[in-house]
Image 1 (cartoon, rainbow, N blue to C red):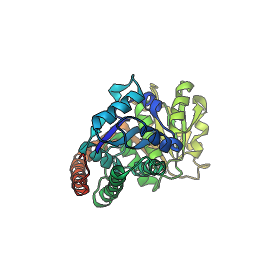
Image 2 (image 1 turned 90 degrees about the vertical axis):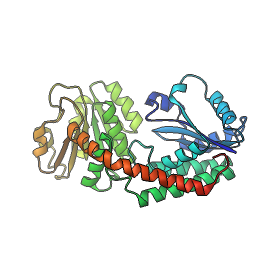
Image 3 (image 1 turned 135 degrees about the vertical axis):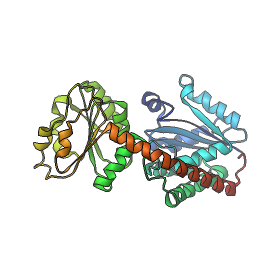
Image 4 (image 1 turned 60 degrees about the vertical axis):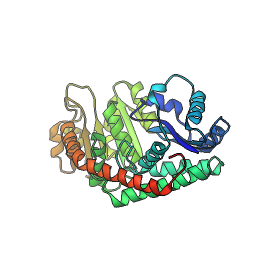
Length: 330
């Protein structure tokens, strides 16, 4: 039996491609079971999140299984898909389970999503000896990587750095409320990263309300008209601003006006815009934490060198664990 992973993620495909191939969590088992009807596929697990859709397959021939799946998915977006076969597929699964392949390195949400995908496939009768062993090993590896390395420390992207700072300010982000002002790519990634760590509510506002609606739908949030965002400020914990405005969009009086209503709770402002959206004087308000793009980028760069060794250690750990598994076709 040989292993195959065929997928696309946040690095290989834009959201309009990813959403085309997304699978509802309630249908993951059904989709995995349906794959067994295809030539060369004997076991299957389907993983689908906001950042990735991946198919894990086992069959006598990796090439035949892959050809069948490609034929099923159809033409049109081939350049966005990647495939891993045999040992590389097992390695990739373990890296996904360990958070090494995530937008926010070391994030934990994917671990639970992977367990859910496997459970649905297993309950549907779509897995067998090969994928059962592989996924159980991947879950063990994911747990070991997170407990025995510092992979979750020191984010290496602007989005990841913003999330780490938010966690230092608020502790756990469960229930955290966010407003995104502007709908740029970095603000989308940052909001998505906050949601992956527990943020429960996201408001999106943009001068083009249509674009705000699109991003709000993607994040599972709510669009707010651009002339109404100040009314939301009293109830949020995090503000992400990334507009193309030539002047400051968020000014001290905006925050001063809601301080008493907020009961002086901490407010974290992330200014990703150039020129800056948020007046630096806002950062002088006592309970406000303001970071601009240069500060976030510098913190991320400082962390990259430290993280390189951690990633190497994690991959060595994964390779060692997979050697013990001794799966066929790897």
